Image 1 (tube, one colour):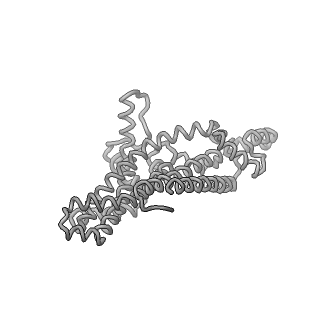
Image 2 (cartoon, one colour):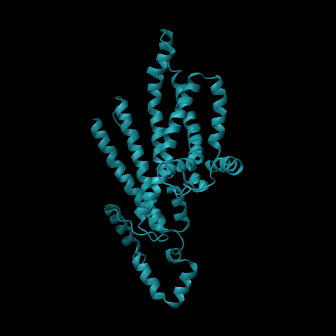
Image 3 (cartoon, helix red, strand yellow):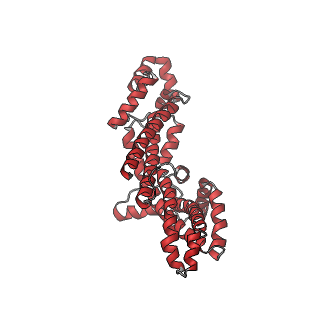
Length: 326
């Protein structure tokens, strides 16, 4: 039964990815503006247009801009299957090479942020929810609620202004000072990523804290928990065997959704700290109407979201034998 459920879920996910690919393609290609202007630049474009319009035709042919929309769509589907995503209009480099390079830096920042925030937010949420009304609950709950409503870019600007600009403890921008190798380069990268990592961990930990505290508070008031207390079962055993076990499944969904946003969820932080990752590249490619770059960025984001959803469903089926169908 579980095998059939998982197979059905995978097939639905493949259909979802195809639908997202189709919608994103037509949205990207319906954006206003002439891609040739972005490829050549305003001044060069109008200069060539007046003096040598045949060159514009050759460039448009090179990038497939003369093809009809259906032709471009089927070429795009073929490029996905062959992993040949063409060249960036702006950088004039293979799109896949540029994206993989940027993805490396985004994962370097986003993976530890997601793991640390899951551990910190989950642990604090359990402690506050299990001891409702305690000192930790009274302090952390209003702080988490306030922090969860403040946009991440505002927190990033505030942290940057205090710790980088005023105190000068950390660099204002960039990912490395350059000219370093080995352990010296690794330490320098860690120094540069300290502030953006702090902002992401702080923001996500507050959200995780609110979720986990809510789960614990709700579950500890269930009848089977009250029955266990009436039988004299130790509080630590109730927390470990009953509360945490039932909190784990909904918390999985929250964490999987965060991993789904691992590529696109740090756009504002990357822009503020000039961290040259996927978020910064998505922002710049949209501004410059770099269609091939945008399409691959959207594709990777969609795949991450769908895979995270599949992971959540798989973990639900594995850890909860009561689940027979989605």
